[in-house]
Length: 562
Image (cartoon, rainbow, N blue to C red; front, side, top):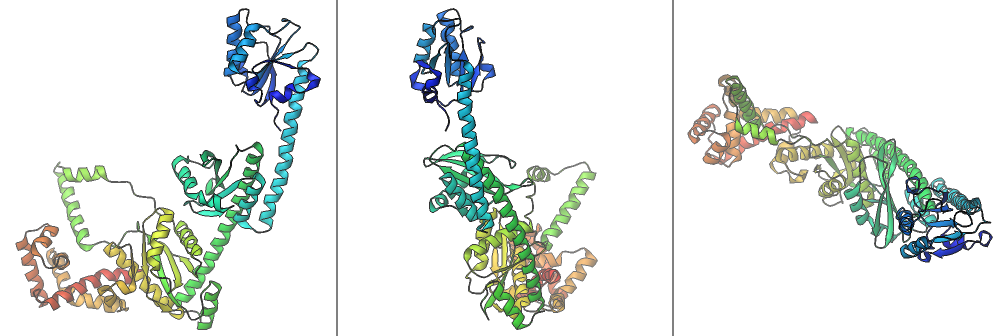
């Protein structure tokens, strides 16, 4: 409904006459302004029709042409020249300049007051604003109805697309579509996410504009209280109108409310899941209660289950005894060097190149991303957050669940994850399955693996089958206690040297290099190990027992965590 110069001139009551610049007749008029200044452009924004009686248009053709050029360059919609005052007709230089620039110039006859032109334009502009407001209110009712009918985020997106005659797409914080008004909208997901990742500024008050396959696209953040929850992308072949922007703004508010509501519901459900999972793990439910509870989360009766323990790879593994011992020695040397006024060039370089630590991943974000991934798979699942990650209960039929969760959820949140999985267990043995998953997770920490199932642990599985922590400790101490005593009394390194020797398959050169000692020193230490324990390192059986004892010592930290 915007008024153009052509439409203004068509108003017979005003008796306006086009003199030049017909090429620009379809320019939209934003407002009307009257000025007799020689250069009024500093007081104009563009899109106005300027009305003048020509008092200061210049007294030479050059000045008059410059006057028209300034107005056209400022983006005005046109010039109305009032005759019968200082000029009987518009100067020839002004007419010629306007025609050359395609800048609309029209004559305002003496009987037509400027206020009549202002009223004609303002009436049309106000009518358009009222129409936009009226249509926006009706559109808001449509969008609100989608919320009241509990159609969720998808319903809001579909309703928005319908009222603006375009499409709408809602993306989560990881670029995954939460809702799409059509298949065409969903097909634009990757391109919209690329635009967000490449152009998104800081904060929540921004808007991105782009052209995607001939459609004008507007992208805005969805959220409240300074927190972005998602992104809304809307598009259509035409430039978005004022009506489109008003309706999209209302949709943003409704989406923020809906997503906050969904998050609150999800948090409550997660707490309920956590309580139920804890009861299962403690064995505090009868088989009937466990079966009924699992059925609420989609598990079939008598199904075998697997527990996954998921955490960020940023969670530090337990300290490696050998590394810790060497680090302590290095620290001691550095302290000595400081006292003597010397410094280590290597240490200086390491300090200069050290990277700032990555901000830890919150358990809430990990739980949300894991739940979002599993909900899209369509299968049964149960999620329970814990101190550093989440426990997940899934049916045993989900092949390689730990690898899928690691890859898909990790991709979703942009972080490396670590996942341990139990072996299949009945629902009445969730406690055992949880221990197995945590064992597998701890082994992943020790070995630097991304994921592992309890059935993949090999030697570790043998040791972990000794579920009694005291039994595991006794097994390790039966071989290693004499070495511990010697190291404590003599400041020795028998245990760490034995570990390095075994870890490198009894290769003297490799193990001594890792330890930073001469191979003869390592041979002396291994003879001392044989003397104290009565075992022979040349025996593959004795080496195997030593290796199991060293591994058992490492896995005592698992028992402590449990």
